[in-house]
Length: 403
Image (tube, rainbow, N blue to C red; front, side, top):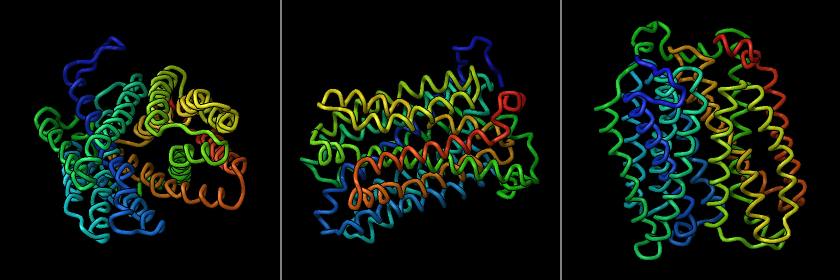
């Protein structure tokens, strides 16, 4: 596969890879975010308790974990492009099927199926990127795709604002079928990499390879811990921060204004993180961002007006979610071709499934303690991730460079 020599230039095939994966990530995140914007309407229609409503996201996360494992293995066994298309079809049609959900059981079922498809898509997309670009560019390219996910969230917000007041939440989910167009583009323009076609058939998609030796097993578990912290910090801050500001600090900020400012900060953080990762290595990149995130959560207690809150929120978003795309880049380098998609999906979806419970933990802490306790909790998570990251020997500059 041709790799161009200029660091910031893509050949035609690489451009198609970026378009396909970025569009897939963006539209997947759009579909996932539909639930966030429609949840209050779903609760009102079905007269749900807080526990019943919260279980919708939990079931989605469980679907992501199962789908991530299954489709990761499938992608390593039969091919990335074919499996990538299957995952998009599943989460797109399952999201659109919510139009027909007239009871809570149907909501649970369709969100579980959508989770299966969405969970499988992440690792496959990252693997396609890894096998289409040189190692020196992977961090930056991954950051571009990570930014597409945030743009998908903005599209979800815009569609929700237009559709919900006039047509209701059922109609909003019909737009979930849009990602299907990506499957036709991917099938027509993408191909399996030579590294995949030449890889060993005996070990393709073997989950045991993630735990083959004590060193590799520790690496896998350590990366899972980091992914759990990443997702826990993201969902904890994004789901609760506007409420914390309103109830605890008596500051009110519009959800759309807050979201846009935070997403812009996240996108800038991803671009910066990708450059540092490629230029200076993963230890320094994660070290800077994890340390800044651990300190930054305390800064959130300082705003005294709405504008300072928006600025601080963007800064915290810059560091806390700037790291997100970096996980796919390092996992793709730390694991061989035969289990690359499996490793990406298993590690990140364990993070999604476990880290997603942070919203429940923070809710409990707010009910029984105070805002400072929440900040200490989140900050401690980032410190744990930092310590764990420093113990992964293959992330040392000398080791990582030679992988």
